[in-house]
Each structure stands twice: as C-alpha cells, then as structure tokens.
Image (cartoon, helix red, strand yellow):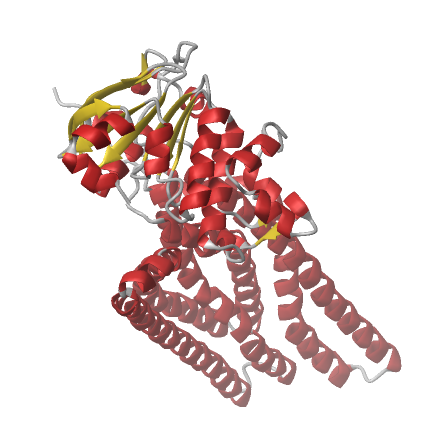
Length: 566
C-alpha cells in the first residue's frame, strides 16, 4: 500500500502566512479604519444625491444646514480614518520588514554557513528589497478589503436606484479583475527575475570593490569592469521589461476602470432620460461613477502587489529554508590545544597529514598558494567536514563532532584578507569589548605606529573596509584582532605579505613571543616567520614533503631555498 503524496506548501506562501498571522491585530484595525474611509468616501456622492433630492422637495434653511452638517461629518470621517488607518498599517509594515531583515541577516551571520547558492551581495538584496516587498502584504490585504467595501457599498446604493446599475458595477468589477489577474502573473515572474539579476549585479560589484587593488596590480580591472557591465546590463534590461509590464498593467487597469465609470454614467443618464430614476439618483449615480474609480484602481492594483510580495517571499525562502552546510556535534575539545590534520583531501590537497602539538609554533611553507588557501578553508570550517576526505582534530576531537561554539572558542583562522569594519581601531581589534590583550596585540602586530600617529589613539575612526588605512595597516590591524582573541589554537594565513621586511622581522619575533605556550600554525612563505617557528612543514603537490627547522631546510633543500629565500 502506497502512502499518498501530499503537496507541501510553498515556502514563499508560508512566509506570507507568517507575516499575516503576526500582524492580525494591526490588520484588523487597519481594515476597519480603511473600510470606514472607503465607505465614507463612497457615501459622499450618495449624500449629495439625497441632498439634491430633498432640497428639490423641501426648500427650507434647516434642511440645507442639516445637509451641510452631514457632509462635514462625512469629510471628517474620510480624513481621520485614512490618517489613522494608514498610520497603523505602515507601522505594522515597517515592523514586519524589520523582522524579516533581521531574520535573513541572522541566517547570513550564523557561524555555520547555509547551503544556498547566493553570494553575499544577493543575500543583501534579499534582506532589504525582498524583505520590504514581502512586508507590503500587511498593507495590501486591508486595502484590498476596504476597496471591496467601497465597491459593494456603491453597488448596493446604485441597486436601490435601479438594479441594472448595481449589476453593471458588479459585473464590470469581476471582468476587470479577471483580465488583470492574468496580467499580474507575468508581473510576479518578471519581478522575481529582476530581483535575482539585481542581486547578482550587487554581488558582482561587491566582489569587484573587495578585489580592486589586486585587479589594478595585474591589470585585470578592465576585464572585471566588463564582466560587471554585462551583469548590470542584464539587470537593466530586466528592469525595463518589468517597467513595461507594469506600465501595460496600469494602463489597462485605468482604461477598464474609466470604461466602467463611463458605462455607469451613460446608463444612469439614459435611465434618467427615460424617467426611471430621479434627478437626485442621477446625481448620485454620476458621483459614484467618479468616486468609484479610486477604489476600483486600488482594487485592481492589489493582485500585482500580491504577486510581487509572493515573488520576494520565494526569494527569502531560499535563504531562510536553506539547510546548514554541516550539522555540528555536541562535544568540546580536550584542554591543551593540539591540532591534527590526518589525510585531508580537498581541492589541491592530496592527503595532507601533520600534527601541531599543544603549545608548539609551526609554519607551513606551501609552494602552491592555492594549497595554502585550501588548507585554511578546511581549518576554518568554511568547508563542511563531510565535503572533504580525511579528518581534522582539535584537542583530540574530530572537528565534525564539536559544536560550532567550541570550534570558534578554541580555534581561530585569520585569513590573509581579513575584513576591516567601519568603527574605530579599538572596535576592530576587540569587537566583543572584552578589553583583553589589546595592548599586547597592538605591540606584537606593530600597529603601535598607527595608534601613535593619531591623537585619538585606539579610538581613531576607521572607515568601511579600512578605506582610510594602507594595505599594510589593514593587515596589521587584522593580525592584532587575531592575537587579541587569544585562542588555544591560532592559524594565520599570510599575515605579513603587505608589510616591509624590517616590520615583518619584528612581527615574527613578537608573535612567537606572545604566543609562547599556545598552539600556533602559520601558512606563509615569509623567511622571518619561518625562522621564528619551532619547525617548518613543506607543502608541495598537495602533500607534506619535508619537515625541519627553517635554517636546516635552507642549508639542505635547494627547492625550499629557491621558494622562500628573498
């Protein structure tokens, strides 16, 4: 017997339902107020028709005063209900968009990366534009209901004058919505594609900005700009397509609404000419035909916004529903801080095997830079343990069995291109504000000259990505942050490539001194750091081919001498 397959709800629809459920109170209040606004606005031509009818029968000043008073009440109701209704809905909309932005950002900032095929620039677009468009559903539903209220009130009022007028409004509304519902599907698909292309362009320009200096260095900036131009042009073309579709939709909606209003006015005029409705009812019908265009316009635009919200919700679901790249275990490493790489196969690594004992300072001289980058990625858990062969152990425990908190607490891998954040020197060195090891880290990384150069010292302002710092200053700031963390195991990847030889020599000595008794692994080709290490491992062809002190390797290994001697 087969179990029937049940269709799972679409993730985007589930996100929209969550947004609606969380704001049900605000939506009810907003629907009531906006419904009152639409009802009062529709009541204006109805009251005007009644006033004309009554005035023709009773020409007293009292009736005129009562009529003016009733119109004032209607106008006041229109003004206040709109003001407070939109205030309630926009507050809920803004709050809900904030919630989704925080949730998407939290997914992107989790220590365990998610298995989603989106770059950081694309996730940024999801967390901003898509979050805003998804939250628009909070306003769309109440406005849809309130517009329906206005149309129903108008249809009922016209039916009291003549049933044919009411039926004309209802039939025309159904026809308009049927046509626009078909068009709105294309808008949703086009909008989703536009958001994807804009996100890809954002990711491309983010990558371009990050790599601008290296690109200028080897003359690759023109090719990179050309690649960005192509992606940006694709996004522009799709945006034009979306604008064209939206324009066609808006023009069609306006034309259909105007046709319906014209049909109601002409029908009312014909009925009045035939004597089947009174002059007051004619005034009411013509007024309603004019006033009903606004709720009809709003009502006809709602399917478009619903499709746009759903398209954005589907893109958010890509991030929110993506599974983690790996499932961390519950264990913690044994004290001591030993690091063991046992037969790791990944990328250019072909069975790398070595051990760094607790408290040891070891350097790895990788003849192929890509091999050093692959090893750093594995140690940083940027590659899921199940995605490579072999085992990495920290404190005697396999890294896949450790909780991600334990890994981050005991092992820090500082990349060669460590990110610099907008803030101050102090907040970049000590983001958590613990205040530990800051002075020692500044001195060991030779960042003292940067601190002394500015009157604010450690409180000197740093721009986004360290734009007001040189390449060497950014690298030393990143190194200071790694040293200040004071983890049991520290892995440094090319920490001195942007500093001069004299500063590099001082940094090597300082790092060895500061990290004495703590496990340290440096991936580098710097002679100064290699000489400061207790021993050097040679990584060539994806495997460890030699192991000794730097000076012994210089004396007895010609290939090593050619690779690292400067």
